[in-house]
Length: 632
Image (tube, rainbow, N blue to C red; front, side, top):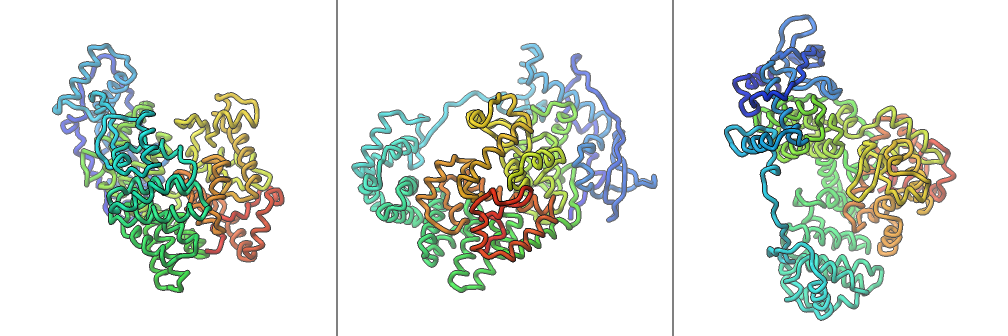
């Protein structure tokens, strides 16, 4: 494991801080803190308490003897009291605070026009450019560019009615030349006007007569439209024909991968596991595609269905190795998944307050973030976080873990989850109770709210799993669509449940009370099937009714993976995963009881149990059909 030496921060001396330093303006009066903070460190392999502060370049051991700080434990920095600023000399910290102060005033437009121009001129000069400078402040607005279905650039964003009419006429007539010159937007608009699968048949015949790679996006888009007319036999024939033609293109494009994925699952739904294996194998060769983990899961299921236990074990081992906390990994592991609690007993991971691999390119931005957070200017950190996320794959895992800590301090739940997700995927060695608690947060206050409003048989840890995915437990969260609060309720939905204002929806207790009420309605509507209720919560119950009509499968995992909306598909899977880990981390005793109960209940009995949510005693778990207790 790489180690952080105390001397590694020495390049942040006053002389070396030129990229961060700006002349101190009269209006900047930084508040300097010389707080000495005790920190838990690992010194020469042993855990000790040391101190950080007063511009120390290192730390002293508990006994007062100077020691080299090898590593900082995650718990030492996750509480927000320790930052890299405390290991810098006074002059460098002062320069950082001055630069940050000037940047904040620039963003708030609280300086004169001349001072704003001076800032921009300074940012344009490579010799004087500050780490706080943003490219978007300097760039001129560019006209958006769209491409046609083949990827050719077009100077148009949304197709007009005339172009959409031409595309619609081309679909009906099977005019591939016109279709291939149309934009994706025009084709989407045209497809919405197709009333049945028969209206697609002529275009399908013309498109599949082309070479497979000539019209992959068009094939996939038409196949997805044809899925809307399932379960009709003629629609199924068209869907398989179009998806297979797109999948036959030896390309790793998103469109081709999407068709391979949907084709394989539709074949599995028909019981044709052997035909599906060909496409699943291709998907499992490319780790970068969005269907990689799912393809491994279904390859393992496919192998087991054919009696190939060696293939099953190989696919399962690869999936659980590369995605140790993933929903599909837990499902595939069966009862052994319950032993993954061993991750909670692994040694606490360490963090690095800087990166040796990336040097000042990373470290300057980390120190800038710490300074803005120190000054309470967290709303101006987005650009810095985006720059760090773009390069984090090249940083040491310990440095990436510290980035997640800073995102968490910034109440940037989505950023924290995104950073930790990629980190745990790339470096499973960071898994521990501390890391998982950061990834699956739950404060005492939130736990109290959930237990207060769950009741009626609804497990509070299901609600925790849902809220974690919806808002990351940020009560002030607002979505671009207008959803508000912890459970991201739309004001229109909330108004059907109670008389409440938008402002009141930002109150945690009010939001959870109404969100739970709505979610219980969905659970009851779908006969206790929480996976269907979750899909309805995300996409709307009417869409779930439509998907149930299209994809008439008994396997709950297959149904979820067949959901055509990627967002909803991921949403249900991620909440199912979250639920498992919330039980593991915060309610292990309940988890153990449910394992034993699940082992004693047959599959048919479980179906009877979920028939009515009202029969489940308050405070206990719903026996979820999507849960890890199901046999796969």
